[in-house]
Image (cartoon, rainbow, N blue to C red):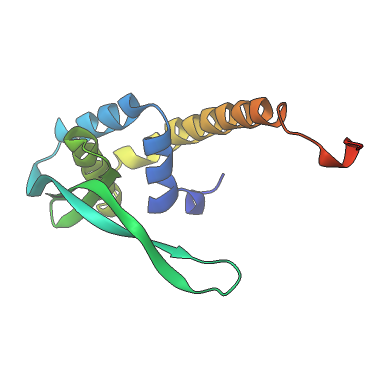
Length: 145
C-alpha cells in the first residue's frame, strides 16, 4: 500500500471503522509532544445527506444526519475531525490526527504500519461478515415451480 493510499478520506475511514482506541493513542502521542490549540470545540450539528439516483443521475437530499465536528491547530496547520453521531472525543482525536498529517509531523510516518494493519483487519472482518450474509442468499434460478 502506497503513501498515496493513506489520504485523508482513507485514513479517516480506517480510524472510524476500526478500533477507536487506535485513534485515541495516535492523538495522545501528538497531544503529549505538541501544543494543540482547539479552534472549535467538539460540537454537534446536522448535515444533509446528498444521494445520486442511479437511473436518471439526478441528485437529491435523503435527509439529515447528526455529526460532531471539531477543529484544532498545531503550529499553523489546521485539522478537522467530523464523525457521525454524538462523539466529542472521537471528533477531537480525528482533528488532532488530521492536523498532525497536515503539519507533516514525523510521528505520522510511523503510523502508516498501524493504519495499514488496521485496514487489513477491517477488510478481513468485512469479508467474514459478507461470507456470513452470502450463506443465506437464495438462488432463484434453481427454484423450480
